[in-house]
Length: 208
Image (tube, helix red, strand yellow):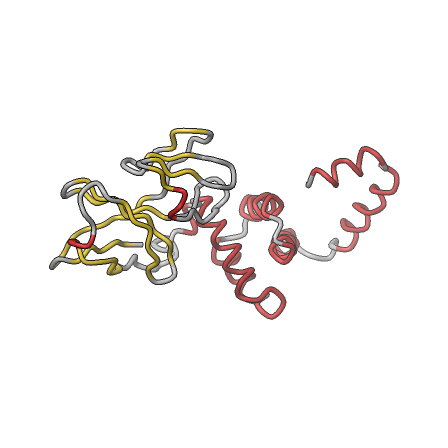
């Protein structure tokens, strides 16, 4: 629950007890998986990240498959719209749940053309947008590192201005990362997500 709901439960337990009894009774004719999927959709509609993560975890623990979660999101398109569905999927990707990996769902990762290899000098880092995905590209000699631009904490999309020297700092909660390794060096503990990359025919490619 949110901090506000926790407060109300403590401050007005009688009134809130009726509220939760209503919710329980309203869903008594639904099977647990359907009830969980509806709860997930309501959190996406409200764009409540904490609640979405909580109810998504509950749905998966109670037997919902990743494909059922995706189907529920897509079926709710008339109410949610594309922007909220993308918001939810970004959080799912940031949670790095193995069942949602494209390979686990039957899709093969694809290579994407990022730039000419000569466009980035050794020691340089650049933020780019490719096929709808934000990326940080760092070159160290002939070694290339391609990272997702979203912070692993709460999927904040980190801008180019957040890079100072070799340190990339998320503006939302100040998690800091060494762009040379992708490792988190302050505040948090999770590294930046790194994508496979290669240079082919003078072009830098990355796979996701």
